Length: 174
Image (cartoon, rainbow, N blue to C red; front, side, top):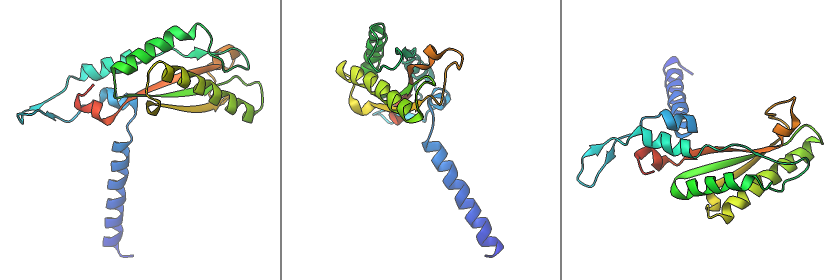
């Protein structure tokens, strides 16, 4: 391969990598990203207020839901927090959430992954019953792999929330 072809190939690979990164932004990026101008019906460009995006994400912050040992049944104290989350999501149609299920170190890796999945699914079902569209909620299980506190097993038996806004939210359509 000659030098010119190699330089061209490297340039294309670099541009491809940048395009992927831009399409795969995180929630933190969404809060700090300056959105492109929005064109109104009259053709005038307006900038959405970045505080709107930050407020939308702030309203969607949620405390973890803690579960009893070897259980995926939602504890009664979780219902108030989940009701608040559901209401905030219903008011923000572009918001999406990932519910991550976690466990303590007791049990096998396979058992803990399955228990974490059941915990996340339990939270998802509750949110769907409160009117959040199922397609806006994804679930994942980390089992025992991401402890909140290795010295306090009760803090590891949890479901955590990760919120993000759809691409349209960056154009000011919260």
